[in-house]
Image 1 (cartoon, one colour):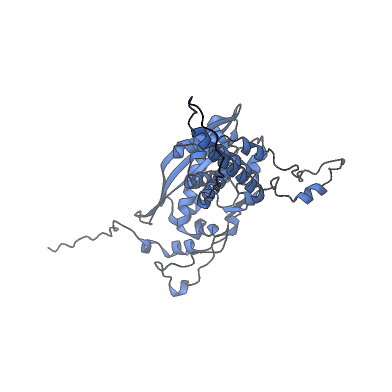
Image 2 (cartoon, helix red, strand yellow):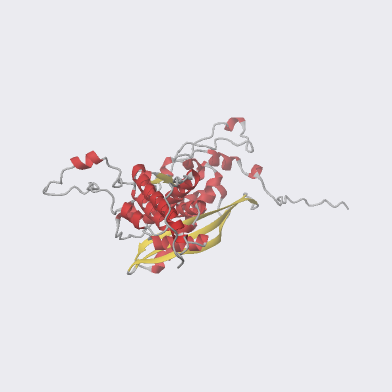
Length: 396
C-alpha cells in the first residue's frame, strides 16, 4: 500500500515587501486624491478616520493593528474658573500584515494632543487623549507612502513622491499606475464648540505666519500717518485696528531693572515673542552689556580691604592707570541670543495653546527637569516642537 504524503501550503514565518499584492503596491504608489487633504493654518493634513479607512482598504479588515505604547498627561490647568486645558503625549505602534496574516512591518511614532478651554474636565482629558493618539497614528501611517500623506510633508504637495520602488517591480502591462477612484470629499470630524476667551487660539504659532503683525512691524512713518477711525454707522468686522504706540510694555526699563542675567533673558524673550525688530533687541543687549561692565567695575571696589586704624601715609601723587576695555565674547553673546530666541518661540507656542508661562515651566519641569528659562536650546526646541504638534493635532 502506497502512502501519499499530504502537503499543506503553510505560510512562512516572516514576511517581506514581495508579499504585498500588485493591487496593494499600485494603491500605495498612486498619488493622494486631493479631496482627502485638509488645510488648517496653511498646513495640509489628513483626517484620522480617513487614515483608518485607507488602512482597511489597503490591508483589509484585521490586516493592521495599532498599539498604544505610552499615554501621559503632560499638563492639566484650570485657566479660568470652570475652564480646563489639558495636554497629553502619546506613543503608538502601527503593525501591518500580509493577506495571509503574517506581520509585514511595524512603525512607532509619538505626538502631543491638547484640549483647550473646555467647560468639563472629563471632556478635556478625553479630547486631548484622542488627539494625541490620532496624531501619532497618522505619523506612523505616513511611512506607507503617498496614500497616507507622505507627499504632504513636501510643502503640502499632492503630487506623488514615492512613484516607484525597486522592491516592487511592475509587470510590463501595469507600468502606468492608474489613479485611485475618487471618493466624496473628506470632511473633518466634528469637534466640541470651544468658547474662546482670548484671540490667542486663532494666532498661528510661528511669527512669520501670524495673522497680524506685532507692534514693531509697522513703519514709524506709517503709524504717524494713520488717522483716527471715523465714526461710521457700522463697523467692518474683518478689520482689526492697527497696533499703535510701540510695544505693550517698556522692555528697556524692564531690562534696566533686571536683577540677574536670567531675568534679562526672560525680558528679551518676551520682546522677541511680541515681534521686536533687530534694532530694538540691540538696544536691550546694550543695556545688558552696560550692566555687566558696571558690575565688573564695582567688583574690585567691594573686594578692597578696609582701612586700618594706623596713621595714613601722606597722600602721593596719583598715577594714571590705563583703563582696560572689556573684551567682548561673540560666542557667548551669540549663545545667549540663540537661547533667548528659542525661549521666545516656546512662549509663542504656549500662547497659541492659551498656556501661561507658569504652565510652560511646569511642562519643562516634567520633561527636562528644570524651568523653561533654565533649559538648553535643544530642550527648548523639543518642547516647542511638541506644543506646535499639539496645536496641529487639535485641528486633526
